Image (cartoon, rainbow, N blue to C red; front, top):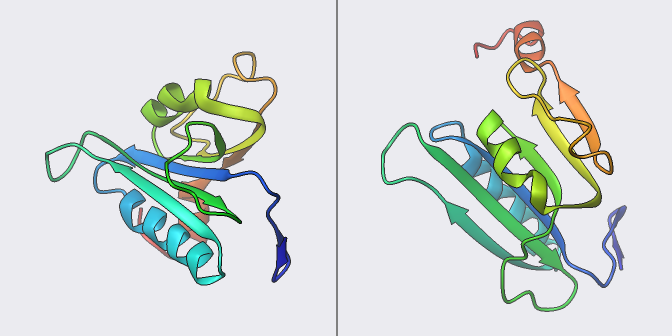
Length: 135
């Protein structure tokens, strides 16, 4: 099915963002779910966060499909790792050909451990500085 230039097959696609509590993964995950739902896709989201206000590992996961999605799928197709812990915990759940986006200064993804994964290292601090934003 093609909607506005985005292709979703009959399978379910899963997005996961994770990091240290307070980094915005809850807001980003919810926004991702809303965008797909408003385009007419079925979504199921799942949030994991510690009971403390700041700190601790937290994630937000969204599974998207053309037909009803009634559970969060374990296999991840797009991972945004805001912390090393997210990369370490999620590496085993990545699908063949999955993409991992991470801050090159803070997160290292072992290519030998995940050779079937597309790695996208971004210099987040440099991008923020060039945009005039604070970390």
